[in-house]
Amino acid sequence: MAKDGRTEKATPKRRQDARKKGQVLKSKELSNLLNYGMLFIGVVFCSSYVVSVFFKIMETMFEQIQINATPMQIIKEMTMEAVPLLIGAFSMYLIFTLLGYYLQVGFLFSPEAAKPNFKKLNPVNYFKQLADMKKSGFELVKNLIVFVIISAVVYNVYLNNAHKFQELLLFSWFESLQQFQGILNELLIKLGIVFTGLGIADYLFQKYQYEDSLKMKKEDIKDEMKNQMGNPEVRSRQKAQFREIMKKQVTKTVPDASVVIVNPTHYAVALRYKKKDGDKVPRVIAKGVDHIALYMKEVARENNIPIIENVPLARKMHAEIDEGDYIPEDLYEVVGKIIAKLVRDNRIKIDK
Image 1 (tube, rainbow, N blue to C red):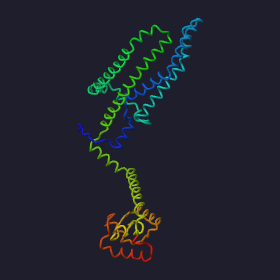
Image 2: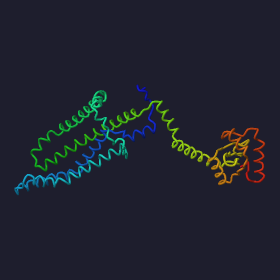
Image 3: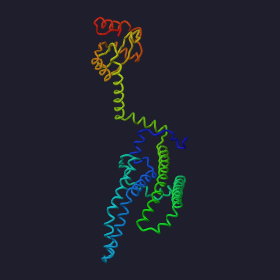
Image 4: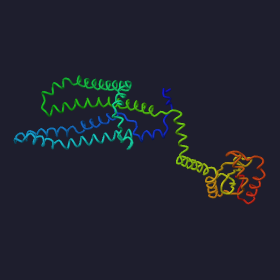
């Protein structure tokens, strides 16, 4: 059990309030994975273009030197050659950053989170954060583990290709770049596997921490329910939802009724008396008041179900009989007369 008493899962309102404040589930390692994916795509699929731009920049530099251009002019011309590559790289970074944010958080703009919080500038709060050794220690250990894993992967790739690094000096610039690209691809693939594992593990851990931070006390849930019940908008919405549920139920049950007894506007009770369904006496299959009663009458008209006005009978059955129950013996006579008349008038058939 949590030491502060927060043992219950967060309610939808609690989650919604946290989201408005900008408190959402985010994983730094998962974002790093997407940024790494951008780097991998750039190197694997755009390496030829990058190499061509590199040689173009070098060619431009030598051309400017031959015409005795000033250092500033040389830098300017080299920069102009690199601009398309830089724009493309920045665009990819921006797209993958936004994609990573959207996949984790969705579309969210939190004005409350955007407000300046001067408490964060308070030196006392800063030292309080430093005092949280548990969290700081965990982050330190996590970063250390990540560093060790990445270093091990880099070292493994180096050992596998140590002889190739020596051979690079024997090749031309272009051949050396091709050899180096093969080594780089191996490194990127292995790092990709590592970052994928780290991203998934960190996301699961951050989700656990996020859910734990949203947990509530039982008293908080009770208070929230009381506040919501006292909210006119919530009450109105709940009533509307209840009416919709009742309407769906009425739509299914009333068409099977033999007769609907009304008073005429406030109460409606649907009775079924069909021997083929095993009814020994009439049974109440639906009842309603006000809006539901009016809707029952509407459904009855649409299905040619007889509607009989009998104020005391409608009130008594609505108050004393539950849906699904048979009518009591004291109502046999009055209900029997109604059904007998409907049968004589060929408005209903109790055998069907």
